[in-house]
Length: 311
Ligand code: 6CS
Image 1 (cartoon, rainbow, N blue to C red):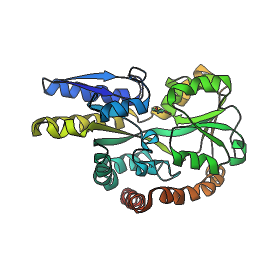
Image 2: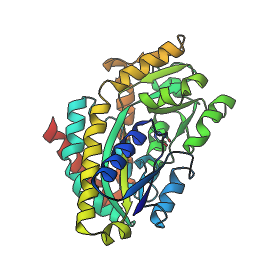
Image 3: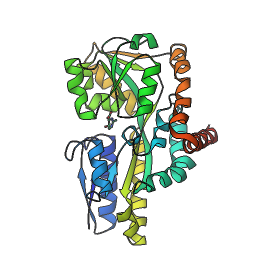
């Protein structure tokens, strides 16, 4: 059969590299074909999710940053400073986490989605017009976030004016001054040339970008056991590849930005400079529990237990 798979990035970006590995594996090990739809070909993140829930697409990569309305618990990935910065710990967490591999699939299933995997895309840094050395520097800064209430809450406590927008509007909004900042992982800051319309990159160590790949559940459930296993194997293959692919990518991307635009300021904040951001962000965890109740608390507790196990 022909399977259709849409994602939120270009073909050469992390989600596209993952999807390409998935496609190659499926086509090499079966008679099925996978048609890839990169960002922009079928609309924004919310559009490709709707198309997957409707069964027009079989596979979709949608980041929790856009899944918050559908699955509020997915916002846990925006509790600042929850995920470790150490790559080995982070990768081991995604590989072994019970929250990700056992609990989240049940929540996605209720929305008609078979959650196949979640993986990290790299450390998230801020790009702004002015330096951000303390939370006070974000005061009055209209800061674009993904359409996610908890991310709004996080930038609120840092004093910014959080502005949820779909990705397709971000470059233009920075260019025209409607917003003055946004955040994304290093590779994406480089590949989308977002540095052309901002002056300063600031890394606070507050998060790593998490994404999720899923299938339409009715489609998946109706497949022969052999095809389900084929899909799971292809996902494992692409997962291993994408973790390896990302080693060193963040640093390389920042170096490429510096090369393309030498006067771009790149500030990696010290532990001491991060402290006020951490302290202000501590209340965001309570906001997450308020938004999601017992179900969110269970996910958060399990993530903490999963993290403790890899530390
Ligand atoms: O900021 C965003 O909206 C986008 N960022 C990444 C790294 N991937 C897709 C997403 O749409």
